[in-house]
Length: 297
Image 1 (cartoon, rainbow, N blue to C red):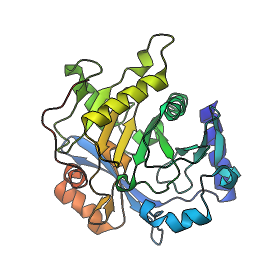
Image 2 (image 1 turned 90 degrees about the vertical axis):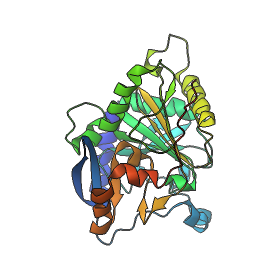
Image 3 (image 1 turned 60 degrees about the vertical axis):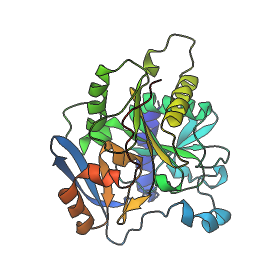
């Protein structure tokens, strides 16, 4: 069972010292009736550098290459094409990384085999998955990888009354006014983005979940006229894609989890900006202007 294998790996990696916690404190806050989470970087801890700073390091050592994977971090093989490992520099609990067994560039979109492995992990771990594509997305390694955080872990930090991510649940409720499979946006995100209620869990027997998700994602990327850098969040019900214009705003780096309402800050000055402006203004600063007439699938 994948979830049990993950938890056994956590105990093993904690015992050996292979895991490194990046955060010192977590604070659940509210912006109107939207909960969000501020995680503060522990003193003297440096977050792994972005893709632009990785070229020399990659030539020396790729941490996601099969021969370099730390045994204590490995959870299991997935479909023979990917390997699920613990996130060595974890910000929240039960955070895993799904890496391709063969080197592929992080700047390339997900293909059906990626979606097959990711969807299996989402189901088996009861997790949401995300993909930071390209430098401006917040990606930290050039070797293609997706990431997952269990829903149980994610909602525990914000005391959510639901069994799903609060922002994604709000979007799912909003989706009720659209035909299933339609591209839609939400009024609280004032930047270019697109959601699809993908319906993968309800596919008829014989239909491929991986092909279906790949088709939905490709169509959504085209509809958004996305640049090479974008963030993608996949839950059991929704796919969200956000094209990225900037990697950070005033030193606050944003990756995919920012669009679920979770943010990593380095100091009180960065935290105070969230209080003053709210999370949606900060997200808008790294995205593109909103498209007011969304195309439909």
